Length: 275
Image (cartoon, rainbow, N blue to C red; front, side, top):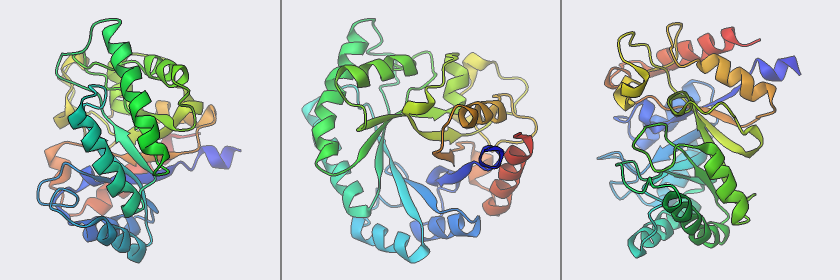
């Protein structure tokens, strides 16, 4: 068992190198010896937003020998409207045709929809409506609570309870994001319900936890303030066997001339810290 603990299965999110075209991104994964990738629908000038057909994305993934773990993401998923339903259907259709296994579901994060009672009801409504959309296309929905104080879904417990209430076990799983987990301050990990882990570090010594934002998120190194290695170790110890996907948002990471070397070094740092 120790061998499993010391070898987490890594993946990369297109946010590690958003300027790379989809083919280059898949090749980056292969250069790192990785089999799993997350593609995004929010990168200007890149697939999916540039109109690249899903069949072409599927073909390029097959050519590179990578598996599309997720499309990231259906935004504001817990604000269910006719417009959101249409977005969900279109994205789910694309995901299925591209060969993706799951859709990441990101909650409203603008300070609205946070009232107690209202936010739980909104969440249940959205999950109920999403369930048949995902089921008919054979997709999993990855619910990603965000740790920001203004977010309408900060708590993984709340997400887990809503999934259980609507009978969504098996169709929905949680995303454990090491950055958001640290910000939310929620100790429980929910490994059995976790389908994906996003990893990024914060090394800026000046920024307070409540002021941490996406631009602070770098690759995990020895100066990480978020306790990534401890979080990863705890998840592995508690039986999590899924992917650990790099998702840094810092401009200095995204502008790297050699992202492969930097990501490889981060993987080595993480593995060296694990028991």
